[in-house]
Amino acid sequence: MLQIFLSIGAITLLAIATLSMNRGFEVNDTVMRSSKYAVIATSLASSVIEEAAGKAFDEASTKSLLHSTADLTPSANFGLDGGETKLTRDDFDDYNGFDQNDTVDVGGALNKVVFSTTCRVTYVTLANPDLDAGSTTWFKKISVSITSEVMTDTVRQEMIFSYFRFE
Image: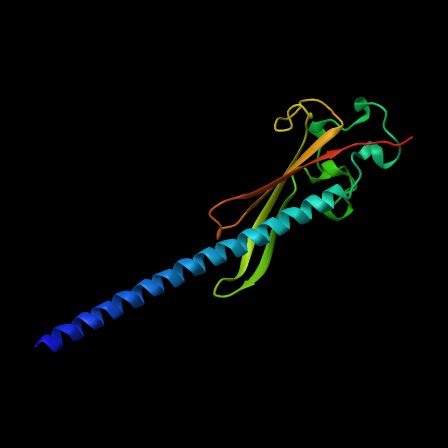
């Protein structure tokens, strides 16, 4: 009779250990997937920022040197200029209002995941780069947000782009 109770106890302990291990694997898998999605979202945001930073500071600076902030595009006119498309952007503030969905093959059970990218460009000051300056300055900030149904958080990246002229 004692051997039966010992056997039942051993089987119970084995079952508890197996369930704990399975729960641990599930948590580990969830963390790995979340990390994978965050890395992809971060890469997408970095790509947009790098692309924007490779453009001219302002539409007016594509043709000549600027000498006054009065020559800059007002923030109300940020976005694609007349005749421009997503493929022909030529300056930093053309990314204001940028909205794009990217479908990424992540493998596994979900296979393809959609990431939504949105951008906002504002003028900022060095004294307070977190607030819209409300007027033209030599500093523009791009804020990129990436969301997805599979992520619980939004990935946000920002970069300040400054105009420098060398005469």
